[in-house]
Figure 1 (cartoon, helix red, strand yellow):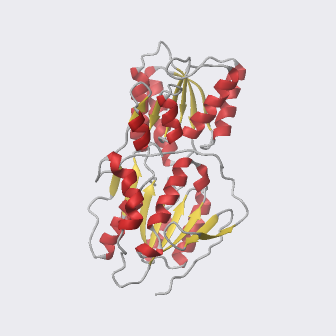
Figure 2 (cartoon, helix red, strand yellow):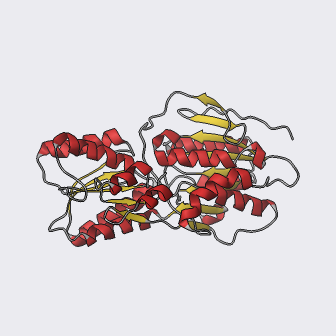
Figure 3 (cartoon, rainbow, N blue to C red):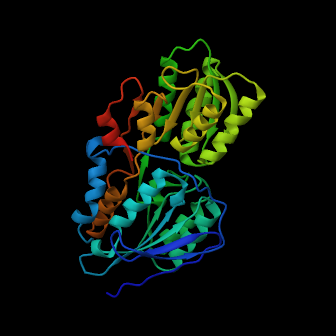
Length: 364
């Protein structure tokens, strides 16, 4: 079957058709959406394999994946993701998907990117009109997807969620491969409690509001803070962006208000927060005045922990393509998926116990 390249234009989005595994892609860019350009998230291990093997599994996906279409025809896949420039996590996630969903592995894949839910929904509707076999979705927001998923089902398009959950009837999608963002937050908050500080004055820097990562990580902190009597000095979104996070922390410093914990919902925002502290001569980390908490296990973040400059980093796994590929192969062979939700196992790292091996194994 001759492969078709679908170049789709959705207002404010970039959409690309991947020609081959890890190869060049054709891109069409519409007027720029209001997206962040700094970095932000990172990830974990899988349920079927040990966490340490996750990255190896993802790297081997291109070489080991069998072409799913027994007939020899390419399986047409529309992949909707967040902006790959949003974060180091998202860059790794996008590269992992492109390495797996390519012609060599039996796929004709088209990609659409946005941090805005309405733009993602427009892209999904276009992919359905184009007759894709599968719609792979990492939603910018948890709500608003019911009608799109109903249209997909009515048109015989199977939907697989990855990276983020949505508020929709599970009968409308085949499976969801996700991190447990609330569990990530709970682990970080439990670590905070274990520090037994005399008082907790916290700057809470949130990710893109409404995203599963923001909701899970925020709820863990705000609920515990209320129960424990912790003081949230500032709670504001930085949209996964380091520069915005730096501005938030600088505003608190300028106000003269006291704080001793920064809870940033991804590594890039933690990095921006630390830049503000450094500019003001405020110490941080293991022997510092301010505890630094981030998420995603970017390699630079784990190196900061190893050096004692940060205190805690929560893992979040970007490598979901091998799981999705296995699901598609099962469905194409007439099988069924026994688990609707596949949650990846994830770790938390403490500056007091992290090792170089941890940095090399889990850093992305």
